[in-house]
Image (cartoon, rainbow, N blue to C red; front, side):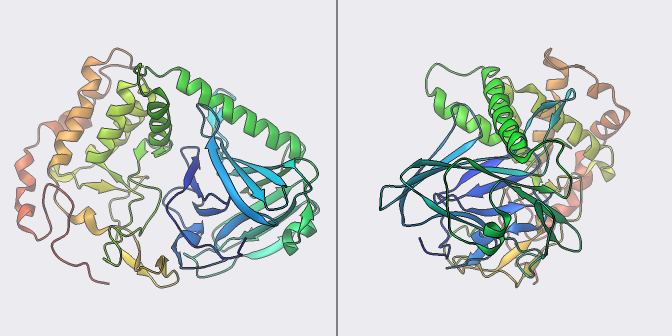
Length: 411
């Protein structure tokens, strides 16, 4: 196996409705933002150019030749099996923990990985190369008694592992003779052993997603495809506020060398409605309730009834766009952009999406408090304002029903 990553888009996603990570078929995490979807991607090899060994979290198998990858049944827990030419093989299990704890959903900014020997005498190597500032800088690394810390000015991540820490930090090849675990997350102490914590998190996360899919109302045909699509859509939900992001990534080109590389880690009102409507039809009503709270907070501060087409996951209105020089882009096809100037556009179909979402307040008896949003003073105030108050903005270049730009955005 080469030490370099040649990026591709055949990627699997793990997540917990706070963060999402993309894992390639060689069990390398090539994209993950900490501490949430919109934040700095500490693992950014996906945008690192043609070949890079930075911005990744890799588990390598000596003599690697091929792999197979699949999700656990009805779950967001991912399994990747790596096979070497000498017959040795390992299994890597990945998840972002999500389960019920203390009567709430526990969803830490954390990734848990398990390495398991399957056959032969496999030798493995762990490579952990986080970069912050959109790839501009390497965090300071410190070591504790049984952990390592990766420190930047705004964030510190802590790594726990059952493998010898000296092997991990020096990227030494070693024999994998039993299950080994890696936990990367907040700079906090564990309350039980590393192995017990990792096993519990993987098992309870798997059980959570199995229980979630059991609650879905799915068609007779194409059940596996519908379940997998439903889980993937749910993983785009920033549950803390109810926002739905358009994508986990930024700056994947619309077409090769087109320069049309946009940051989609934000919530478009129109697109989000389609997601929550699809999940609602499958019976996942909590996502819809969260989105209704999100748009209620938006309309409560909407000036003259005007709704911009896209907001940040934390209700941020200004998403000023800038280019990043520290990352070359997907397969070198830059630029890499952060932010999205589409927030200044007029997209009038967003109003219809908001109204269609709000109708559930009146008609869906499954909601915990049906009709509550319709009684909101803020909601009534917005609904009574004339939509024509925003029509003067329609004359500006680039404003349309969709979001294709007609004028370039300054660098």
